[in-house]
Image (cartoon, rainbow, N blue to C red; front, side, top):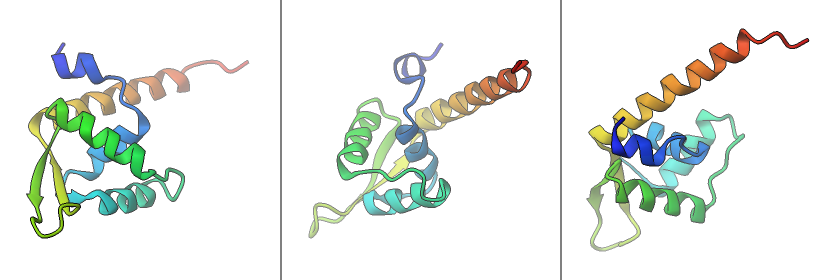
Length: 108
């Protein structure tokens, strides 16, 4: 198993949706809005959760800095890396397997 997958799987729900949103470059506020939209408002990322997850995902090279506005240091855009895509795809398969097993479970 890949070391990044071994270290980070299972992803938190926040990290999963952050990686999913970063298939195109996006800054923090854009990520928050994208996640809210994807989850129909069910998941709202607080700034601390978002930036903690971004820092962790960047540490493991699952995302990278895409652009940086020198005039406004808070305007950083991030994008998913190949390692992040591999992790995200692994998680999608893992979750699909869980759902398949749950649907086959007799709830009696």
